[in-house]
Amino acid sequence: MSTDQCTTQPAELAWFKSSYSGTSGGDCVEVAAHLDAVHVRDSKVEGGGPVLQIGRDEWAAFIALAAE
Image (cartoon, rainbow, N blue to C red):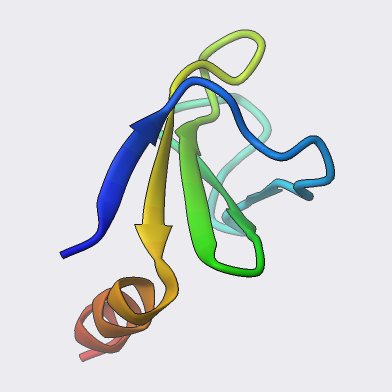
């Protein structure tokens, strides 16, 4: 499995929050796709906080299992 916690991240990442995430906050994550990985962070952390970097193949497997 290919996951890493990163403290730095590419500046050009475009972060997306789930459409199920309300405007009142809550327990949400933000996701940004990059060429070689998908980046995930806690949307509640001011300034973005730490980022989990997941390989694209591993992310695809996660999404496939989550969709079942």
